[in-house]
Length: 442
Image (cartoon, rainbow, N blue to C red):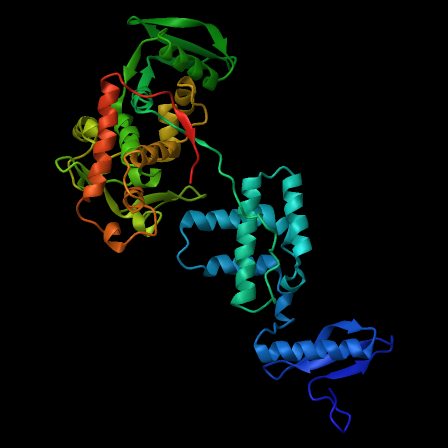
């Protein structure tokens, strides 16, 4: 509104040669700003100045000059400044930004992003074949970045990510194995057919295999080594070729399942973490494999991941055999080392065990190693234990600190362990339940 001498109390309005009206006003720092929009009527310009003045008084004003920063530049800085992110999370965020966000929105200024623009971006992702789950991950990252821009840095007045349900993922059901299937899997990952593959001069491959102790030549010539190796493995599974049994991976399958361990946790275990007399395993570290292939040893996935878990007595003999046969005597020796004594990589495990072929042979194509932990969690839940005790065993957050740094197995955890043990005993007595079922992953 104007003072008596004709000057405005806040800001100023001038008429441009085009006939439209432009506003200028001082920001909270005293520096004069020119409005980014022009107005057809002077009354509209006055109204805009009044709104800006009210925003400044309420502390809700955002500097339009700061809103000119491009989304890609701001998001890059946002990821770099997020303290406490796990290495794989950083890799995921940078991949999502490069693959699904930057090509569409990276060059847009923050101040010009709108809900309609983001809705179209999401529709384009889905229209180009990106899965709902991956689009939800990208949307959640974008929403988090812009939330900081709105609420902490005050670059934009509000977060334009306002699409209901866009960040929701509907996890597919994952298989839950029976106890009998877990033991079958543990045995199958160690079976090795006896034979060899030789490359011929014409880039074909010849397969030789052992049958009843005698080496024989397969009548077929294969076009690739992978085809020949797959044929040899299949012959070993159906009894047409002799097999040996490498038991070094048997214990990792049993322990990951019945102690509900993640891959990174089980691969980081040291001899000193296993107490067979007490029947416990201590989880205090985890390996993380970055997108670059680098293995990083750090803390478990969550604070609650540091825990002591009971081991069912039914798998103690397998662990005792494994420690005596494959693990060095030093307390710091890896319980499940790789081929050269270093950490066991998931890719190396999958290759050496022929995981994909094994689970397909069992009628469980697509089974992931993490499904073993899921199976263990389901078995633990069937014990009837309370939610907090289950969370402590599984290494989930939102439990008391005493559960995180426990030095002895809680009574409730022993109840869970005993309940799993009973199922193992029932399996040995031939009373195992129905074939593997599907259950939702939380």
